[in-house]
Image (cartoon, rainbow, N blue to C red; front, side):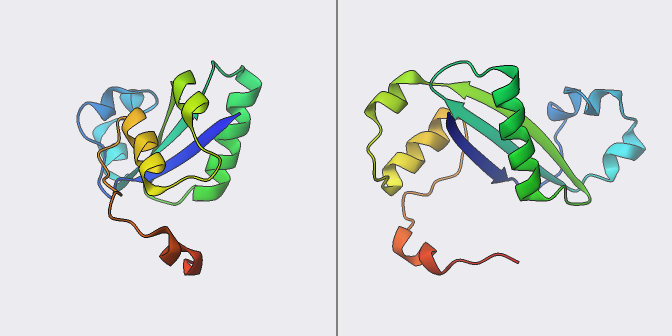
Length: 122
């Protein structure tokens, strides 16, 4: 179906993001409660049905566990060529291409994937 990318920006909403629904309908006091922004990207090779998109959304929200004081923005991107060219075993460069496709500014080119096998989360 596609790839799910979760990006923790470790910052509050900026003025442009405050113009997005549902933030646009909140007053400034309510917005002050959101200290961190998490962006969730769906990267697919074709337009997803409403049902498929909701599966991604539910799964993503379960992963981030709807943390208190966090705002979430969900964006979908379509790039058929990436899926045609993608290898079966991803290297760091392939993950970096995905970040570029969703307009992320993170640079993971120096990441060693072998060190991630010991990564754990609480």
